[in-house]
Length: 63
Image 1 (cartoon, rainbow, N blue to C red):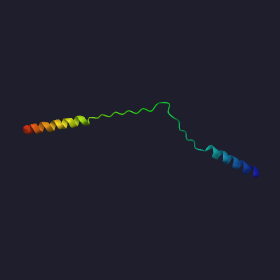
Image 2: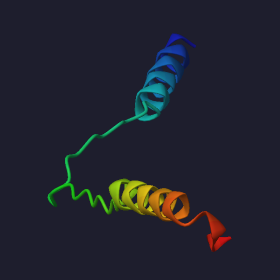
Image 3: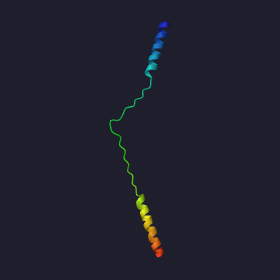
Image 4: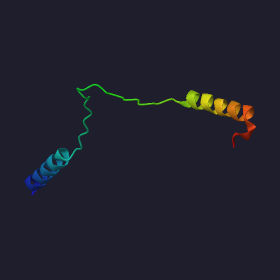
């Protein structure tokens, strides 16, 4: 009877030990590549807006 309990406890411990979760964090062997495709055209729009305002101011009968 005692032998069966020891065997049951040992088997239970082995089953619980086998169920431990494993988390692996491995670094990538490739470098991180970040592409920034940014198009800045704000100054062009401001210049065009100013040119249009000047054109309208100089030619009020345009529109």
